[in-house]
Length: 233
Image (tube, rainbow, N blue to C red; front, side, top):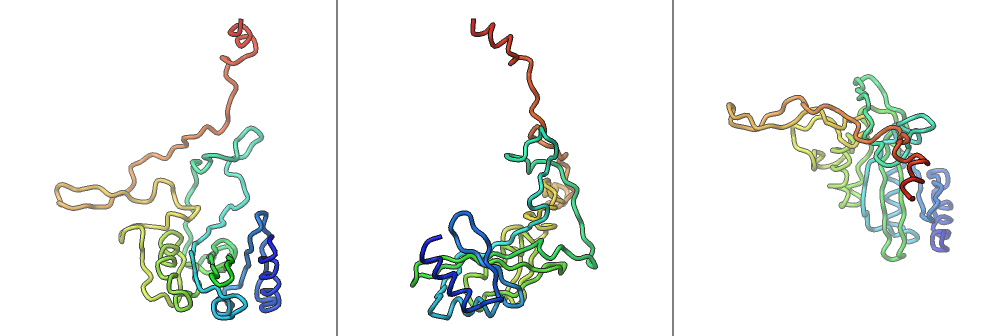
């Protein structure tokens, strides 16, 4: 971590104390974790106080930590990288009475201080509520408006106090939130044009789910040692 970030980390620790935690980094960046109850107070101080001066919010993004750190395929001969996202999953549908893991959904804020030429990443978990909900920071950084709508659309995270929280990337009839880890890869519905009705309609998905990447790479007899040697001769 550079001297500038070491200085910022010391200032953050002195100013906020137990209101935040530092997230370990392997690339020299600075990330803090803040409780959702302290979000607005910490965000306001980061923007207004001269020691920080984070006047620009560059991005807001949602994160779904469902199955984070676990392999989708198990077994000593199975790949753990590449296109393993193609494995079939069973969708997990939660009732209104159910709760999420408190650290499943998070909102990440990317801040920039022009006057100090430094960046900061702030992560806030949404807690166990279903649906996940967190306070909007639109009144602090106006650029959060469309960013929060995107996180709502893709992850289903609600932003309390947002002036116009509605979908921004998917259409009005879309079902579910496509960036959630338990969202089916083929979706829930598909759109077709109905000639009899003369309009576009929704219908259940007709695509059959399939895994396009082999789970295990097997040896091929064409590449045995004897054939290799005869080919070289």
